[in-house]
Image (cartoon, rainbow, N blue to C red):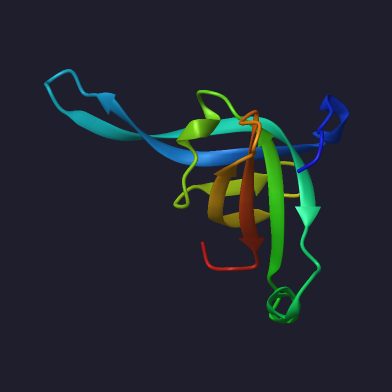
Length: 113
């Protein structure tokens, strides 16, 4: 994506992930954690595949977020939520930008999570 300015990150999103924490007995427990951050949404409108998905009630979106220690934990099994609307997105891909400052999260709403 082209240059992103701080004002472009105008959406509030949360990512629900599972992290491993020591249980005190030499093992680990899976503990839910929520990562909140700001994002820039770019709704996909383009080709035949995207239009077919939209006809089926699915909305593909690319959310650009800042890359940091916490957001690097986001994987394709993570759920992304728009904290303002409550819309849940199933993550399809997480790709760093060329400058490595941001992550582009390709996700889809209207699918089984």
